[in-house]
Image 1 (cartoon, rainbow, N blue to C red):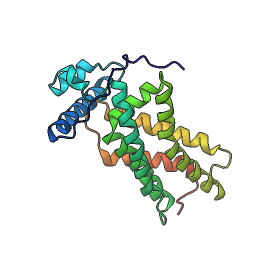
Image 2: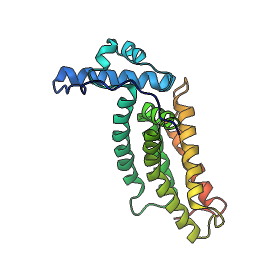
Image 3: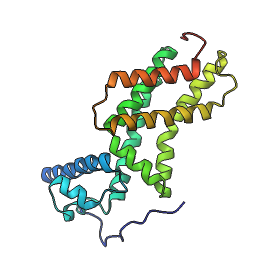
Length: 215
């Protein structure tokens, strides 16, 4: 796998901006970047695009980030922490299998809805950059581990006995990501409840289908 070309390193790191104005400017740049990337993808987005969306000069961008890859790298670290936090609701004790399927679907949906630009950026850069490939694998590891363990528990109850737990987990997660992207990157406004319900039903049936309700 090749490494994505990035601009030459700047002689000095971008300065910190602890002031309210500095934080506000960086937030505006981040918001603009998310808007453009959600629409065009990270590979087609230029720093000029981001600056124009933010109503600022391209030079302003470099006050905060060395490159768009550096920006996404910071996003990736925060996104990974958010994935871990959302996973806690899915692993709570006392949930039925149906409820756990719903919580897993909801966690993926809301993460994707709230972080569409981050998901798109990391996924696309993972195709051409080894660092981002590792970030993507790390981000996927939490839901894959959870789903794999769910499949193993289901197999102990007699469900999907001939299936490989990890392959099932990877297939379900890939379906989640593609479905969420299709719904959220399109021109319309998706129905959150309907989308979560659809994902939860597919998740549940893939593991427990044909054997009735499981608790």
